[in-house]
Length: 114
View 1: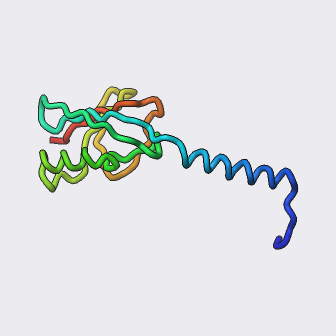
View 2: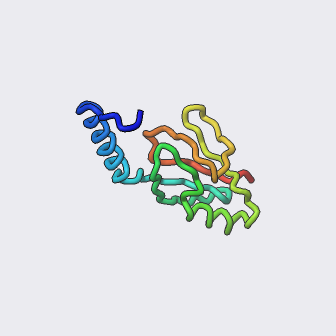
View 3: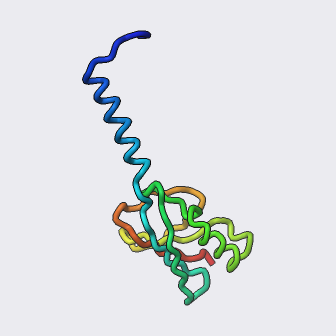
């Protein structure tokens, strides 16, 4: 209904929602260590920030994409394996797509498909 007055309770709820949204926008990014194996036996630790943690796309770590292109070539295809500790397995991942990781993670283990 147009022109309806809102109650004090509704107004307080709106103000609280706005305050919550502001607080979320000021949160520090989650610090991650990406342990990357692009060549067999050679580990590259990359420090990265996840601004929307626990949702994170590996392509957000530009250093990872640059290293993969340097080592694997420009046609590496953004496909990479990420270790899943809960399942004890490596999962093929599209680095450009965000995935929901456990909020407790501070380190991701990553290796090339080759």
